[in-house]
Length: 532
Image (tube, rainbow, N blue to C red; front, side):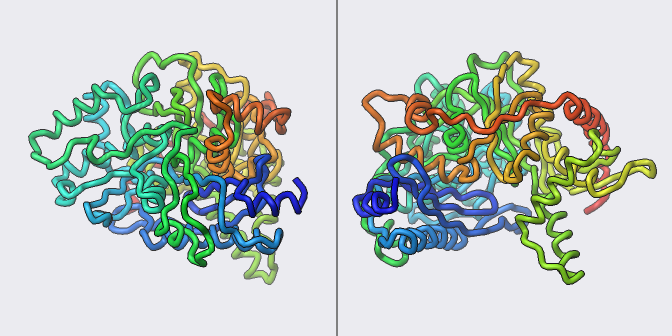
């Protein structure tokens, strides 16, 4: 679309807005009728470790959402000369899972417990045994049951239990709903009924009955909605909360809020069977849409769904590039100390490119970027660690290569389980910060996963763009049109992206590194035991 056409679309509300609250950045992306991003805004933020809990504060949530929206609206004004007063549809997305419990007055009862926390081991194990269904530690029901086991006083006062994007949606619309993809990260979801597993709901209610709590599970959980369903409209109070300038009108429709896994699948056109995507940034997770159910329960594999409700195997790792980012910041500090000012993006790109010059196996170096616990390798806490022997080939290229390798180590452990189950993938669609430097993260991911990796030009927009696509789907789909058809025919038609196939030497080198990685886990355990 041309500038004048875009301006008209903005005036007439023929747009869609996606806002995603990621681990380190909140981003707003506005798209036109052709699904092209026309304006964006972002806000950086960080989780805090307070009183043994990884959390974000309620004020930080709203200041971040408002700042990203204002920056997007400012770009609309500066680029197209239009004041943003209406939008065709809005979708919110955020980090999946976690625990946000509210009382009848709508006040949060305990600080938001994010996906990063690994404090629910006892509850996770007990619920997995009872349901015969893997319940990860970060799932909302695991946090809820652990709070019950811990006799936490707030439990009896719970009126609503929700995830982050569902909380934002609720405050803007008044609707207690959530997209099925993230509902599946709160409590097990049945892909057939597109609702919580009733058998397990009954089992949970029976389990907690002796506690004498004034609620049953469904009383406090959000209603399950699938992609394309209507999920409420922006209220007057919600419009004022989202747009502090007061320009945005109420009445804008919102689609079901979704987790970042669901918007990641949408943004990479990987919601159909035999497709998969991998999101690699602060955390890393791979999503594989299944053709059939897995043969048994695996504690390393989560079963969730696409935004449309189809069954998905998810390998989720708490740690990916956080420790690597910290090293890059150290190099930046060194450069500034030496009187050299360098752009952060240039620094990342240069160091990532340097990694390609390293030895295929990483030169005998070993690193664990465990800033927090990692359930796939059975660590309840993390200790970032770098180790080498006197004979290791210690240089910058190998240093960078091994940190890129280790960011995918836990993911590799989980994906090996799926491959052993006979799961087949033709290609993985990649998105997230790891892929920003062209070709580097992509080639290393291909070698690590033993499958071609495709990165589309739109991948840089990430989950916020995927959220905007879900909003567009709700208002623009044809009667009976499925999400996978809409994406394939109306969004990604003719777009294949850049595909990198695994290099045999890189594969062999990564496999050597993985042997070192698995053997060295005892070193990481010792660091956890002795470094308090």
